[in-house]
Amino acid sequence: MSYLQETRDAGREVFPDLARACALIGIALVNVAVFSHPMMGGYSAEGALEGADKWSYFIVNAFFLMKSYTLFSFMFGVGFAYQMKSAERRGVGFAGRYWRRSIGLLVLGLLHVALLFQGDILVIYAILGCLLFLFRNMGESGLIRWAIALYAVQILVVVLASGSFIAGMAFAPEAMQEQIAMNDELIVSANEAYGSGTFADSIAQRFTEWGQVITFGMMMQGIGAMAFFVFGLAAVRMGSIADPARPFWKRCRHVFLPIGVTGSAVGAWFMVNAEGGMMSTGAMIGMMFIVAFSPFSTAGYLGLIAKWAEKPQGAFKIFLARGGTASLTAYLLQSVIFSLVFNNYGLGYFGEMGAAVTILLALAVGFGSIASTSLWRLAFPRGPMEFLLRRWTYLGAR
Image (cartoon, rainbow, N blue to C red):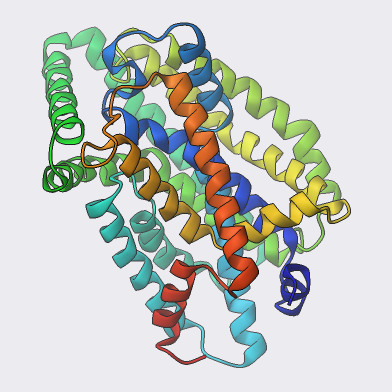
């Protein structure tokens, strides 16, 4: 059965699969910095960036940082709505299957942290997905109000956290220098574990860093991810996903996108020019801009993808969308490749590549992961990780 026929029979649309594929490419561009360089230092851990490295980092921050994950989070909410509709259409219970699926995501996420990547999103998604369940019967207007309120809280949290750091640097520099020294120690231990350590060393280091990731991730983007879960659920309820020609998507392209890109570019400029790397006043100001304006960029990207989905079904579009149906497999495949390229137990390029080369590699891996899952789906009904998660969710029965 062809991808298009399968999609129609399942009551789905091409639009979400295209969006997932695009989000995964952006996620690769963002995540590679954590695989290739110390998490707490990033590309600037060894000093200020210049030339192609600086401009490459600027592009990723301006166009992908905090946008790819919100786009993927939006699709998580869309997927949640589709699962509810599928259960209703088939006359089967939804709650039990959904909770099993959430547990499965949590287990996969913890394994992902241990073996591959401390910046994992699956654990956060599993936790937030439990909260999303509470919104399942809410009306469209209520969902929109909640989503806007949640993202407003996200902006407030980031402003308060960044403002506290900036105030500390101004009024309590000695105390802040102690925190920066602790950050420098984490950079040294990361270089040792990933750059010259064993696989066991990398596992220990990942869990050390993950404790900060789960806290920082929930604070800096977890609430925003929850907001976009709810936005995605609302979009399906309102029929916006099923109709990419809606005027709303045009407004996203023409109004929201310029606002988001402009504000994010300002934030990216602060970040790439920050003296002192990630633990600096400039980086914190930049992050505030990016968090505040990223929702507009994400909405704009969705508007562009909707326009693309509206057009005739070309071969490349179908190829990309088919790969997006196995997004979990593609996401984990990216981690496997990056781990083998950068860790000492693989090719050992940790800290060895500049930002420009690293980002170009990530672009290839992002497209390659989608191409791999698309080719896989020509022969199999779902991706390998999707198959395992589905078997667990349904406990071996349809």
